[in-house]
Length: 198
Image (tube, rainbow, N blue to C red; front, top):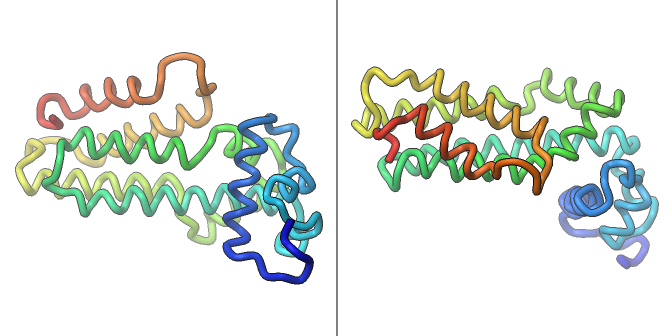
């Protein structure tokens, strides 16, 4: 355990990662401040020293993961002209699903205080699905200009369909049950992009 009074490097990420492990292993009901700090191997009071409470912590975790996902989507622009368009998009979509575990996102929706704090964060400009959708659109339009997508392809609608699918999968999928996200996104991209995305 980290000694009392000693600064813990990357404390927020350490606590966030610990919370994700607790939820993945034991379910959302097991997420308590004590379970998080025990998993993170730090003092019991650390979480409350940095967050107003568990609701604020959960909201900040969700906001952090959305910001990470938006950065990952924005990085698509650097892949213009490389690899297959569908493969580039699928890599990011699967990364988004990994960065936003359904149980954690669900926590922020089912805890009223966390839901309010999350909504306030989005209203204050924290990146959310709209930022991810814009990043997809920018990427697709760049691929259009490069001739790798047809000029008449509707980049904005393709981006909307992808983000809608990510949202749907986040809210409904149960890991280990049903079709794997790889198969779902591959089929969706085949429909949206046709042969142009290969």
